[in-house]
Length: 57
Image (cartoon, rainbow, N blue to C red):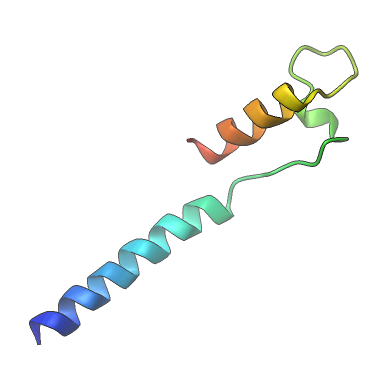
């Protein structure tokens, strides 16, 4: 019984972690939402920083 409860708890915790990641808004390289400095060009650094901030990592 303890194993069942522990495995159920582990599954619920992992699903909770996946659910928060799935809600993050990842954008593609051409998306203007990732244009942090507003120059009209989305660099790879800006894209990386935007996606990392959206994931909260």
